[in-house]
Amino acid sequence: MNDNYQHKGLRKKLVNQIRKKGIKSEKVLNAINEVPRHLFMDSSFVHFSYADQAFPIGAGQTISQPYTVAFQTELLDLKSQEKVLEVGTGSGYQAAVLIEMGVRVFTIERHRELFLKSQTTLNSLGYKPEFFYGDGYKGLPGYAPFDKILVTAGATEVPDDLLCQLKVGGILVVPLGERNSQKMIKIVKEDDEKYTRTEHGYFVFVPLLKGKAG
Ligand code: SAH
Image (cartoon, rainbow, N blue to C red; front, side, top):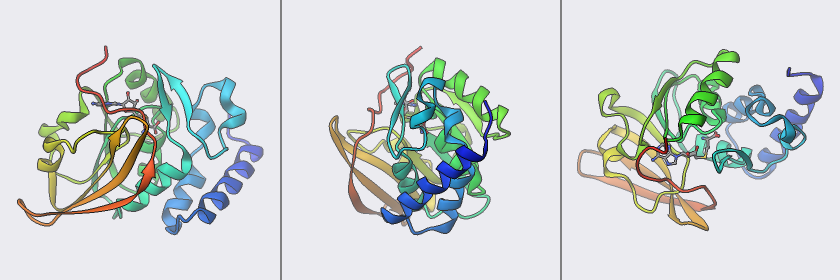
């Protein structure tokens, strides 16, 4: 499958849609415009790939809605070359958007099938994050600290390990709540003891689960 003028046209429309929904960062909008989202989805869903909706990607998981991907990316306030940890690689789409933002991406997934598939997809498109198979609840202590941490699954609590692995001045973005709805939370690490927390509306994610799925 390729990325033809029709896909590019649909992507432009999608970018305009999410701009209207409130995404202001031109850098984020440009990243969404660059990543061929249809190549991260099962071919039977290609017709839906540029609708602003979440879709199944196998193993009972979903690729996040483009607006949600843009929203979380904007909240991270990314600077070039920052070190970013993504929890929940899924399809790999969000990782590609982060790479288009000019940052170094470390991404972790608990489903082996998705861990393997996302590598094939991302590498075939020339995106080269560091991939990890494991429990993102624990973060990646061997690679910490990170400038920014993005959780792309709904958590019922803020994982302490992730806060510890954030640099002072760093930002953690995590959807927090029960299964049917989560509040988008942004936490800024002011110093080792002080965190500032702000809330940014409601979203729906698949759950952040402990342990590997095999
Ligand atoms: N960022 C993804 C969204 C995937 S949905 C994308 O762009 O497609 C969330 C993903 O988080 C799922 O793939 C799920 O398996 C994964 N996940 C849930 N709990 C996890 C955990 N503790 N560690 C790592 N990944 C986890």
